[in-house]
Image 1: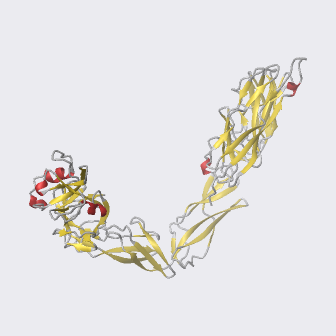
Image 2: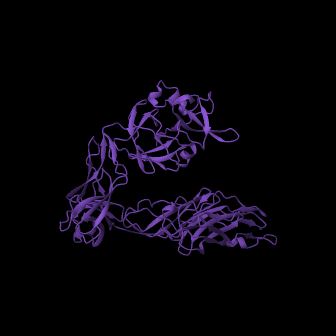
Image 3: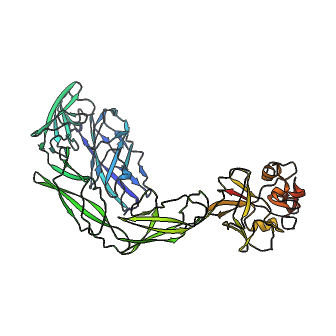
Length: 590
């Protein structure tokens, strides 16, 4: 379960360390006094945004210059320091991981910050501490110290390097053959001819890239001002041991019927060792739960199996699973698809269809994917439809059992609106007035208050449309007369409403008509007036059509009429209706 990020307040406790000789006054006037912040606060708000202080600094009140020898970040309270590049979005909640930057330098996992670029701090001077942090998410509000930061400060200048020593052993001291040495947690201290000492960084490990069996130490080398010194730190290196096994390839057979025998053919198992090597093995043991299905809801049963492999007295395991089917009895289309009317050559569209598979015990609703015949999906063996076809077959396979069902469709011989050429006509769709189907071959008189809607084709009373562009069709006649512009607006048919006809989505509306006889930048002029067609082609003799264009003469809203004697344009009160003009819709393919 995911837990949202809470508001968090953290602090990084500051610990100061000074070279022993730094506290002793060299004369009555020499004084060593350096201040550092008590803490470096880090706050995380509820959205995961990190904020830090911007006024942290080290101030030198000493009588001479001082230098910053060491900055070391030491995690506290179970927190773990991680590289700045860590992907915190992939970490789990409460993993207690954090990363830091100090003065533009990424803090490494061992906590030792490279201070080689830090300049000396003059007497009376200061050094700004610009820092930033990243933290993993927490599941509850909290405030705690996540780390201490040790600053080691000493007088600027000391004698030449006289030796080094590993004063804090690394966290990891036990290794396998071939491992690389890990220096996290290790601290190296340099001593100088003047008796001073300092924890240093920038050292290297000369023989830790690939540890050998029996190796008891690694050598640390440090160079300063041309002088190189070495030291060793003890380790132990063991021979390789079995670390883990992994099922890298599951068996070829993943689906079973109740009572079948498990078949491991095709399964691969890899053994991994503590020295980083690996090998594929075959002499493993196999334990499989009974291949039975006890579900009563039609789901397959997930049955686990375990592989165990032993080598050198060490045993390791890995697990996976197979599916056990309930026996399929039959399938049924419980909800027909949205689209059931098609033209010859169309592809069947299953959108909106619900298919249920019934098993010996229970049932399940199936999804559609014609490229996937797994237990979750049904298929459609033949999707291309032909004239006169009345049903489409749906298929489903469960294990070795295949069942079918059918869904009713109507397939007409005509082409589809998408495929006909511009200028061609097509019959489809039906206009309804108060739920009554109107014959698209004639013009009917509108009755005030009636509601209008469009529906699927019936093959007889369909409307004839002329395709005038790639996505526009215009009715070849007025479908209604005696209807006002306002009545069409109340039905959402002036500026456009979305309708579904034969499973396709369209916007149905009026054409634009232009505001004056000189205004030709409109759909009526473009698609009807400027085309070489007779009035009989558009069935507009003695009958004009309403357009969506409207003007106001200062008194009334006047709608623009086109066609008949109003070919250039005329206006009529939008509230009024007459038998001499009517409703000629257009369709826009969505």
